[in-house]
Structures are given as C-alpha cells and as structure tokens.
Image (cartoon, rainbow, N blue to C red; front, side, top):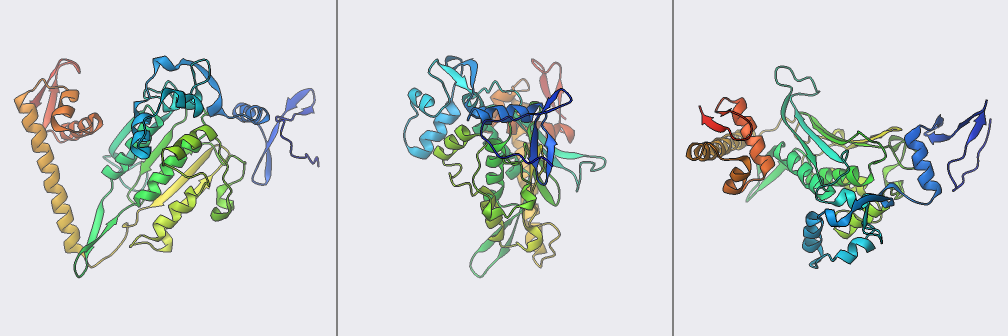
Length: 373
C-alpha cells in the first residue's frame, strides 16, 4: 500500500514500468485520472480554474445585454464596461475569460447548452408518442437559466383545493427547488467535459436535472450529509457573478434549499424528498412530482382546472389561426412581435398545431407560406 499525502502542486505522478500515471480519489477508490481529470489537476496546481482562464475572443465582438439587464433589475445600477474586468469576465488585454464567454449573449462555447424534454410516461420509451415537448437552448448562461425554468413551468400542472375563504395551489414541482437545481447545474458543472450539456428530463412522476462533472472534491453526494457539505466552487468566477446577480448565495446552501422548499409544500411527504446522485463524471438531481399518484377528494376541482386549461389551449390556437389566415406569409419573428410571445413559444405552438393537423407549411422553410386546414 502506498500512502500519499495531500499536496497543492498537482498533478503528482506515479512512475510504473516507464509510464507516468496520476490517480484521483473517488469515494473509497483510487482511480486512474483521464485526460479531463489531468486538466483539472493542472489547474488546481496553478491555483486557477477553468472559468478564470483567458480566451482568444475579443470583448468588442460580443454583447452582454442579458447580463446588464439582470444586473440593472437586481441592483438598480447600470453595469459599466470596467466592471466586466473587475468581475473577471475580461482580461486587461480586452479578451474574454471563459466566464465572460459563457455569459456573452451569443456564447462561443458551443457545448454550453441545455437540452429539455417532456417525456410521455415514466421513461424515455413512452410508446407511440415518446415526447410531448422538447427544446434545445444555447447562449448566455442567464438565457439558459431563464429558458430552462420557462420550459419546466410550461410543462407542469397545478392542482388546487378550496379553503374557507380562498384556495391553495399545489404545483407538481416547487419553483424554488427546480430553479436552484438549474443554477447549480449551470454554475457548478464541469466545462472541461466537451460535448456534454445540461439536461432537463421531465417524466410523469419526476424531473431529472443532469449536469456534467461530479463533486469537485471527488466524494459522492449520496454518501454525504447534505447539510454538512461545505461550499466548494468549481467555477468561482461564475459563482461570484451569479451571487452579484442575486441568483445564489456565497455560503453554498443550494442543496439544502431544494430540500426545504419541498418540505414546505402542502402536498409533501417523505416519499417525495429530492434525491442527489453523483459519480465520477456527472451530478444528477431528481425532483419528485408532488401530485403524482395522489388520490384526493377534489376531483371536481381538478376537472375544472383541466377544462380551463383546454379552453386556454383552444383560445391560443384560434389566435394563431387568425394571424395565419390574415397573413399566410408571416414569419415566426413577425408572429412573435404580433402576439407578444417569445420566438421559442411561437415555434413550440406552431409545432403542436402542425402535429394536430391544424396547419401546414407549404414551400421552403424560408419564403414559404402557411395553410390553415
């Protein structure tokens, strides 16, 4: 047995049969470091992080409107260009750091994306129709956060029950919990893992939020006491910016907040407690559908909500149909402005209406026209 003391000038190599190998600790095992883990060890040995590294992208070629908009809304102050440097997003030569590239409106880091799917059933093989809705988002981390949260809200339902003088809403998922999970997935993911994105998979009974990279210290979260996990920031520059924007706290209490929000829900029981699972290469949050499998005495109320939802869908479709009848050559961008709906929302609604056979697009994707059936 070879006992190795912990050091800060990583990586440390073991020379065996003429081959230099580095090992990392994972749970109760020592495993050979792969290429990505070696990069992490090199950064750690330099007392640096991926998000602090410089890039070849010039700040003059990129906009930060999403960052400025959120900063203004949260602090009441305008974000000046010099603060991009003090925040660690731009270096003294006018080049973006990786953190700056991730927060730019049109992020050049192509694997910084979020894939969202609302599956039909309890797994990814739902039958005739595998998925009800899906979307892929790219751009600034702030856009990814907002779009991911909007996708979840769009695909979850809310039950309610009457009280003496009001009513109690019972959503399928706690907004605070899934928002916190998304923040953690985007800020703490391992961006050294190329070709891997954050995923949101919604099933009938649960939501699964996956991000690349395990625990920064190599431990397994399922073997830890959640309240006792210290704050360890894989991407300290991003974490600092998100704290300045009011999205997270410095003390690293995100997982505890996810659990506490669930415990405060009206329809919570112990079987619905959030789960956290990590491995060498990934971190997964599982949020249970608080309304799944519930047998309540408010069926008439649920029917009322379903009927209202159906009426809303019909009204929305009629608005779109009228717009397409009035101008068959209207573009998605023009529909977005006319109906005051995001372009993603327009794309989603048109896709649904096409699948129902209500409309058909004739001709090329650019320059064609819409036919109302």
